[in-house]
Length: 387
Image 1 (cartoon, rainbow, N blue to C red):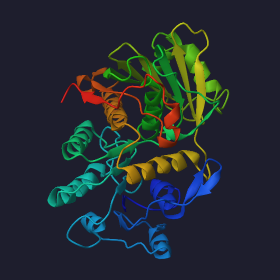
Image 2: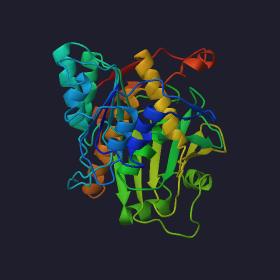
Image 3: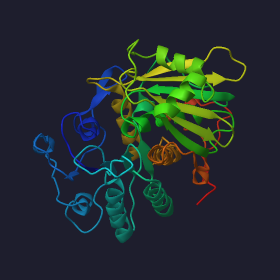
Protein backbone atom coordinates (compact mmCIF):
# COMPACT_ATOMS: atom_id res chain seq x y z
CA UNK A 1 0.00 0.00 0.00
CA UNK A 2 0.95 3.65 -0.38
CA UNK A 3 0.89 6.23 2.42
CA UNK A 4 0.16 9.86 1.51
CA UNK A 5 0.68 12.27 4.41
CA UNK A 6 0.98 15.98 5.14
CA UNK A 7 3.92 15.65 7.56
CA UNK A 8 5.52 12.79 9.47
CA UNK A 9 6.91 13.56 12.93
CA UNK A 10 6.70 11.94 16.36
CA UNK A 11 3.10 11.81 17.67
CA UNK A 12 1.67 13.16 14.42
CA UNK A 13 -1.24 11.22 12.93
CA UNK A 14 1.15 9.90 10.28
CA UNK A 15 3.25 8.45 13.10
CA UNK A 16 0.17 7.10 14.90
CA UNK A 17 -1.09 5.31 11.77
CA UNK A 18 1.71 4.69 9.27
CA UNK A 19 4.33 3.68 11.83
CA UNK A 20 1.94 0.98 13.08
CA UNK A 21 1.58 -0.27 9.51
CA UNK A 22 5.38 -0.44 9.31
CA UNK A 23 6.23 -1.89 12.72
CA UNK A 24 3.11 -3.49 14.20
CA UNK A 25 1.05 -2.43 17.22
CA UNK A 26 -0.65 -3.49 20.43
CA UNK A 27 -3.96 -5.31 20.05
CA UNK A 28 -5.97 -7.27 22.62
CA UNK A 29 -3.11 -7.07 25.14
CA UNK A 30 -0.51 -8.44 22.73
CA UNK A 31 1.73 -7.16 19.94
CA UNK A 32 0.73 -8.00 16.37
CA UNK A 33 2.86 -7.72 13.25
CA UNK A 34 1.58 -5.61 10.35
CA UNK A 35 -0.45 -7.57 7.81
CA UNK A 36 0.23 -5.14 4.95
CA UNK A 37 3.40 -3.78 3.38
CA UNK A 38 3.96 -0.05 3.08
CA UNK A 39 5.49 0.07 -0.38
CA UNK A 40 5.61 3.82 -0.96
CA UNK A 41 5.45 7.10 0.93
CA UNK A 42 4.65 10.67 -0.08
CA UNK A 43 5.15 13.53 2.38
CA UNK A 44 3.74 16.94 1.46
CA UNK A 45 5.95 18.77 3.99
CA UNK A 46 9.22 17.85 5.69
CA UNK A 47 9.64 19.74 8.99
CA UNK A 48 12.91 19.88 10.92
CA UNK A 49 11.68 17.13 13.27
CA UNK A 50 10.64 14.80 10.43
CA UNK A 51 11.04 11.07 11.11
CA UNK A 52 9.88 9.73 7.74
CA UNK A 53 13.35 9.65 6.17
CA UNK A 54 14.84 7.59 8.99
CA UNK A 55 11.88 5.19 9.08
CA UNK A 56 11.87 4.83 5.30
CA UNK A 57 15.55 3.91 5.33
CA UNK A 58 15.08 1.43 8.18
CA UNK A 59 12.16 -0.31 6.48
CA UNK A 60 13.29 0.03 2.87
CA UNK A 61 10.36 2.19 1.81
CA UNK A 62 10.92 4.55 -1.14
CA UNK A 63 9.76 8.14 -0.73
CA UNK A 64 8.36 9.63 -3.93
CA UNK A 65 8.14 13.31 -4.89
CA UNK A 66 4.53 13.07 -6.12
CA UNK A 67 1.38 11.21 -5.13
CA UNK A 68 1.11 9.74 -8.62
CA UNK A 69 4.57 8.23 -8.37
CA UNK A 70 3.81 6.85 -4.91
CA UNK A 71 0.75 5.01 -6.27
CA UNK A 72 2.53 3.78 -9.40
CA UNK A 73 5.89 3.14 -7.70
CA UNK A 74 7.37 5.31 -10.42
CA UNK A 75 5.70 3.36 -13.22
CA UNK A 76 2.73 4.05 -15.47
CA UNK A 77 -0.19 2.55 -13.54
CA UNK A 78 -1.33 1.67 -10.01
CA UNK A 79 1.17 -0.70 -8.39
CA UNK A 80 -0.28 -0.79 -4.86
CA UNK A 81 -3.36 -2.47 -3.39
CA UNK A 82 -4.44 0.30 -1.06
CA UNK A 83 -3.91 3.94 -0.08
CA UNK A 84 -3.82 5.62 3.33
CA UNK A 85 -4.29 9.40 3.34
CA UNK A 86 -3.29 11.26 6.51
CA UNK A 87 -4.07 14.93 5.96
CA UNK A 88 -3.52 16.09 9.54
CA UNK A 89 -0.80 18.34 11.01
CA UNK A 90 1.62 20.55 9.11
CA UNK A 91 1.93 24.21 8.24
CA UNK A 92 -1.31 24.97 6.39
CA UNK A 93 -3.39 28.16 6.56
CA UNK A 94 -6.64 28.82 8.40
CA UNK A 95 -9.60 30.60 6.81
CA UNK A 96 -11.68 33.38 8.35
CA UNK A 97 -13.96 30.81 10.04
CA UNK A 98 -11.01 29.20 11.80
CA UNK A 99 -11.04 26.08 9.64
CA UNK A 100 -7.64 24.47 9.08
CA UNK A 101 -7.22 24.09 5.32
CA UNK A 102 -5.63 20.66 5.18
CA UNK A 103 -5.28 19.36 1.59
CA UNK A 104 -7.39 16.23 2.00
CA UNK A 105 -9.42 16.81 -1.16
CA UNK A 106 -6.26 17.53 -3.17
CA UNK A 107 -4.68 14.31 -1.97
CA UNK A 108 -7.81 12.29 -2.79
CA UNK A 109 -8.22 14.04 -6.14
CA UNK A 110 -4.69 13.02 -7.18
CA UNK A 111 -5.37 9.44 -6.11
CA UNK A 112 -8.63 9.38 -8.07
CA UNK A 113 -6.85 10.72 -11.17
CA UNK A 114 -4.58 7.66 -11.15
CA UNK A 115 -7.59 5.38 -10.68
CA UNK A 116 -9.49 6.98 -13.58
CA UNK A 117 -6.58 6.78 -15.98
CA UNK A 118 -5.92 3.13 -15.24
CA UNK A 119 -9.46 1.88 -14.76
CA UNK A 120 -8.39 0.19 -11.50
CA UNK A 121 -9.33 1.25 -7.96
CA UNK A 122 -8.09 0.20 -4.53
CA UNK A 123 -9.39 0.74 -0.98
CA UNK A 124 -8.65 4.19 0.48
CA UNK A 125 -8.55 5.28 4.11
CA UNK A 126 -8.80 9.02 4.88
CA UNK A 127 -7.84 10.10 8.39
CA UNK A 128 -10.36 12.26 10.35
CA UNK A 129 -12.95 14.33 8.47
CA UNK A 130 -13.13 13.97 4.71
CA UNK A 131 -12.38 17.64 4.08
CA UNK A 132 -12.57 20.99 5.81
CA UNK A 133 -15.77 21.92 3.95
CA UNK A 134 -18.95 20.13 2.94
CA UNK A 135 -18.63 20.68 -0.82
CA UNK A 136 -15.24 18.95 -0.98
CA UNK A 137 -16.39 16.13 1.29
CA UNK A 138 -19.49 15.49 -0.81
CA UNK A 139 -17.36 15.50 -3.99
CA UNK A 140 -15.04 12.91 -2.46
CA UNK A 141 -17.97 10.73 -1.40
CA UNK A 142 -19.55 10.97 -4.86
CA UNK A 143 -16.28 10.08 -6.57
CA UNK A 144 -15.92 7.01 -4.38
CA UNK A 145 -19.48 5.90 -5.12
CA UNK A 146 -19.12 6.50 -8.86
CA UNK A 147 -15.87 4.58 -9.17
CA UNK A 148 -16.66 1.91 -6.59
CA UNK A 149 -13.76 2.88 -4.31
CA UNK A 150 -13.97 1.23 -0.87
CA UNK A 151 -13.60 4.34 1.31
CA UNK A 152 -13.26 4.53 5.08
CA UNK A 153 -12.53 7.64 7.14
CA UNK A 154 -12.97 9.26 10.50
CA UNK A 155 -11.70 9.70 14.03
CA UNK A 156 -9.90 7.04 16.07
CA UNK A 157 -12.03 7.91 19.13
CA UNK A 158 -14.94 5.56 18.30
CA UNK A 159 -12.32 2.77 18.56
CA UNK A 160 -11.05 3.89 21.97
CA UNK A 161 -11.37 2.04 25.26
CA UNK A 162 -14.67 2.88 26.96
CA UNK A 163 -14.57 3.10 30.75
CA UNK A 164 -16.91 1.75 31.98
CA UNK A 165 -17.78 -0.49 29.00
CA UNK A 166 -20.90 0.87 27.32
CA UNK A 167 -22.78 0.46 24.06
CA UNK A 168 -26.19 1.75 23.00
CA UNK A 169 -28.40 -1.31 22.51
CA UNK A 170 -29.09 -1.81 18.83
CA UNK A 171 -32.51 -0.35 18.00
CA UNK A 172 -32.95 1.42 21.36
CA UNK A 173 -35.24 4.42 21.79
CA UNK A 174 -32.67 7.18 22.33
CA UNK A 175 -34.01 10.54 23.49
CA UNK A 176 -30.86 12.62 23.94
CA UNK A 177 -27.05 12.41 23.91
CA UNK A 178 -24.58 14.82 25.53
CA UNK A 179 -20.82 14.67 25.00
CA UNK A 180 -18.39 16.61 27.20
CA UNK A 181 -15.08 17.16 25.41
CA UNK A 182 -11.68 18.78 25.61
CA UNK A 183 -9.66 20.66 23.01
CA UNK A 184 -10.08 22.99 20.06
CA UNK A 185 -13.41 23.75 18.43
CA UNK A 186 -12.72 22.24 15.01
CA UNK A 187 -9.86 19.78 15.57
CA UNK A 188 -11.26 18.13 18.70
CA UNK A 189 -14.87 19.08 18.09
CA UNK A 190 -14.83 16.70 15.13
CA UNK A 191 -13.69 13.86 17.43
CA UNK A 192 -16.56 14.66 19.80
CA UNK A 193 -19.10 14.59 16.97
CA UNK A 194 -17.77 11.20 15.84
CA UNK A 195 -18.22 9.91 19.40
CA UNK A 196 -21.80 11.17 19.47
CA UNK A 197 -22.54 9.76 16.03
CA UNK A 198 -21.19 6.26 16.70
CA UNK A 199 -23.71 6.11 19.57
CA UNK A 200 -26.60 7.87 17.81
CA UNK A 201 -26.53 5.68 14.69
CA UNK A 202 -27.55 2.62 16.76
CA UNK A 203 -30.93 4.10 17.76
CA UNK A 204 -34.31 2.83 16.60
CA UNK A 205 -34.61 3.40 12.85
CA UNK A 206 -30.83 3.94 12.65
CA UNK A 207 -29.47 7.08 11.02
CA UNK A 208 -31.82 9.34 9.04
CA UNK A 209 -29.96 12.64 9.00
CA UNK A 210 -29.51 16.05 10.63
CA UNK A 211 -31.93 18.97 10.21
CA UNK A 212 -29.98 21.83 11.81
CA UNK A 213 -26.78 22.72 13.67
CA UNK A 214 -25.98 25.65 15.95
CA UNK A 215 -22.82 26.68 17.81
CA UNK A 216 -23.32 28.60 21.04
CA UNK A 217 -20.44 30.58 22.55
CA UNK A 218 -19.96 33.49 24.95
CA UNK A 219 -23.18 34.83 26.48
CA UNK A 220 -25.31 32.50 24.37
CA UNK A 221 -23.50 29.49 25.86
CA UNK A 222 -23.83 30.90 29.37
CA UNK A 223 -27.55 31.61 28.99
CA UNK A 224 -28.24 28.16 27.52
CA UNK A 225 -26.22 26.44 30.24
CA UNK A 226 -27.87 28.34 33.08
CA UNK A 227 -31.40 27.93 31.71
CA UNK A 228 -31.06 24.18 31.17
CA UNK A 229 -33.49 24.35 28.26
CA UNK A 230 -31.16 23.48 25.35
CA UNK A 231 -29.66 20.28 26.76
CA UNK A 232 -30.13 18.04 29.78
CA UNK A 233 -28.04 19.17 32.74
CA UNK A 234 -28.34 15.65 34.17
CA UNK A 235 -26.70 14.25 31.04
CA UNK A 236 -24.06 16.98 31.17
CA UNK A 237 -23.22 16.01 34.75
CA UNK A 238 -23.05 12.33 33.78
CA UNK A 239 -20.79 13.03 30.80
CA UNK A 240 -18.41 15.00 33.04
CA UNK A 241 -18.50 12.60 35.99
CA UNK A 242 -17.19 9.61 33.99
CA UNK A 243 -14.02 11.40 32.85
CA UNK A 244 -11.10 13.16 34.54
CA UNK A 245 -11.90 16.84 34.99
CA UNK A 246 -10.69 19.83 36.98
CA UNK A 247 -13.33 20.49 39.62
CA UNK A 248 -13.81 24.18 40.29
CA UNK A 249 -11.94 25.30 37.17
CA UNK A 250 -13.93 27.22 34.56
CA UNK A 251 -13.56 26.00 30.95
CA UNK A 252 -11.72 28.27 28.50
CA UNK A 253 -13.97 29.73 25.80
CA UNK A 254 -16.64 27.00 26.14
CA UNK A 255 -18.92 26.17 23.25
CA UNK A 256 -21.99 24.02 22.67
CA UNK A 257 -22.75 22.29 19.38
CA UNK A 258 -26.53 21.81 19.33
CA UNK A 259 -27.47 19.21 16.72
CA UNK A 260 -31.11 18.65 15.74
CA UNK A 261 -31.75 15.34 13.99
CA UNK A 262 -34.60 14.85 11.54
CA UNK A 263 -36.26 12.20 13.72
CA UNK A 264 -36.25 14.40 16.83
CA UNK A 265 -33.08 13.12 18.51
CA UNK A 266 -31.20 15.82 20.40
CA UNK A 267 -27.39 15.74 20.54
CA UNK A 268 -25.22 18.35 22.25
CA UNK A 269 -21.44 18.48 22.25
CA UNK A 270 -19.99 20.63 25.04
CA UNK A 271 -16.45 21.82 24.35
CA UNK A 272 -15.03 22.35 27.84
CA UNK A 273 -11.30 22.81 27.29
CA UNK A 274 -9.39 23.42 30.50
CA UNK A 275 -12.09 21.67 32.55
CA UNK A 276 -12.77 18.37 30.77
CA UNK A 277 -9.65 16.27 30.26
CA UNK A 278 -11.03 13.41 28.19
CA UNK A 279 -14.22 12.56 26.30
CA UNK A 280 -17.35 11.68 28.25
CA UNK A 281 -20.68 10.71 26.71
CA UNK A 282 -24.10 10.23 28.31
CA UNK A 283 -27.17 8.74 26.62
CA UNK A 284 -30.83 9.02 27.76
CA UNK A 285 -32.94 6.02 26.77
CA UNK A 286 -36.74 6.21 26.72
CA UNK A 287 -38.21 5.00 29.98
CA UNK A 288 -34.88 4.76 31.80
CA UNK A 289 -34.15 7.03 34.75
CA UNK A 290 -30.38 6.57 34.77
CA UNK A 291 -28.38 7.45 31.65
CA UNK A 292 -25.79 5.25 30.00
CA UNK A 293 -22.43 6.97 30.40
CA UNK A 294 -18.81 6.24 29.55
CA UNK A 295 -15.43 7.86 29.02
CA UNK A 296 -13.91 7.38 25.57
CA UNK A 297 -10.37 7.28 26.90
CA UNK A 298 -7.67 8.93 24.80
CA UNK A 299 -4.31 7.67 26.01
CA UNK A 300 -1.57 10.27 26.32
CA UNK A 301 1.23 7.81 25.62
CA UNK A 302 1.78 4.59 23.74
CA UNK A 303 0.24 2.17 22.96
CA UNK A 304 -2.62 4.61 22.09
CA UNK A 305 -5.23 1.86 21.83
CA UNK A 306 -7.68 3.88 19.74
CA UNK A 307 -5.16 4.10 16.89
CA UNK A 308 -4.25 0.42 17.31
CA UNK A 309 -7.84 -0.66 16.76
CA UNK A 310 -8.33 1.84 13.94
CA UNK A 311 -5.24 0.48 12.16
CA UNK A 312 -6.62 -3.04 12.61
CA UNK A 313 -9.73 -1.89 10.74
CA UNK A 314 -7.59 -0.27 8.04
CA UNK A 315 -5.71 -3.52 7.52
CA UNK A 316 -8.95 -5.50 7.41
CA UNK A 317 -10.23 -3.18 4.68
CA UNK A 318 -7.00 -3.57 2.69
CA UNK A 319 -7.24 -7.38 3.03
CA UNK A 320 -10.94 -7.73 2.19
CA UNK A 321 -11.60 -4.73 -0.04
CA UNK A 322 -14.53 -3.77 2.21
CA UNK A 323 -14.82 -0.86 4.65
CA UNK A 324 -15.91 -2.02 8.10
CA UNK A 325 -16.87 1.47 9.28
CA UNK A 326 -19.58 3.36 7.33
CA UNK A 327 -18.27 6.25 5.26
CA UNK A 328 -21.67 7.91 5.70
CA UNK A 329 -20.91 8.43 9.41
CA UNK A 330 -17.90 10.58 8.57
CA UNK A 331 -19.66 12.31 5.67
CA UNK A 332 -22.33 13.34 8.19
CA UNK A 333 -19.90 14.46 10.90
CA UNK A 334 -17.85 16.37 8.29
CA UNK A 335 -20.98 18.26 7.32
CA UNK A 336 -21.80 18.90 10.97
CA UNK A 337 -18.39 20.34 11.90
CA UNK A 338 -18.45 22.55 8.79
CA UNK A 339 -21.89 23.87 9.84
CA UNK A 340 -20.60 24.36 13.42
CA UNK A 341 -17.75 26.52 12.15
CA UNK A 342 -20.11 28.56 9.96
CA UNK A 343 -22.56 29.06 12.84
CA UNK A 344 -19.76 30.13 15.16
CA UNK A 345 -18.40 32.58 12.57
CA UNK A 346 -21.88 34.04 12.05
CA UNK A 347 -22.52 34.72 15.73
CA UNK A 348 -24.34 31.51 16.59
CA UNK A 349 -26.84 31.45 13.74
CA UNK A 350 -28.88 28.24 13.50
CA UNK A 351 -27.81 26.55 10.26
CA UNK A 352 -30.47 24.45 8.56
CA UNK A 353 -28.86 21.42 6.90
CA UNK A 354 -31.24 19.76 4.39
CA UNK A 355 -28.14 18.45 2.60
CA UNK A 356 -27.38 16.30 5.67
CA UNK A 357 -30.40 14.03 5.16
CA UNK A 358 -28.08 11.05 5.14
CA UNK A 359 -29.44 7.61 6.00
CA UNK A 360 -27.39 4.54 6.84
CA UNK A 361 -27.28 1.50 9.10
CA UNK A 362 -24.64 1.10 11.84
CA UNK A 363 -21.68 -1.16 11.14
CA UNK A 364 -21.77 -4.88 11.73
CA UNK A 365 -19.08 -6.37 13.99
CA UNK A 366 -15.80 -7.28 12.25
CA UNK A 367 -15.45 -10.81 10.82
CA UNK A 368 -14.04 -12.50 13.95
CA UNK A 369 -17.18 -11.40 15.84
CA UNK A 370 -19.55 -12.52 13.08
CA UNK A 371 -21.41 -15.02 15.26
CA UNK A 372 -22.41 -12.28 17.71
CA UNK A 373 -24.34 -10.27 15.12
CA UNK A 374 -27.84 -9.46 16.32
CA UNK A 375 -30.33 -11.69 14.44
CA UNK A 376 -32.35 -8.67 13.32
CA UNK A 377 -29.30 -6.77 12.07
CA UNK A 378 -30.08 -5.00 8.77
CA UNK A 379 -28.19 -5.55 5.56
CA UNK A 380 -25.59 -2.84 4.99
CA UNK A 381 -27.33 0.09 3.33
CA UNK A 382 -27.03 3.81 2.89
CA UNK A 383 -28.68 6.62 0.99
CA UNK A 384 -28.46 10.33 0.41
CA UNK A 385 -31.87 11.91 -0.03
CA UNK A 386 -30.30 15.26 -0.96
CA UNK A 387 -27.72 15.14 -3.75
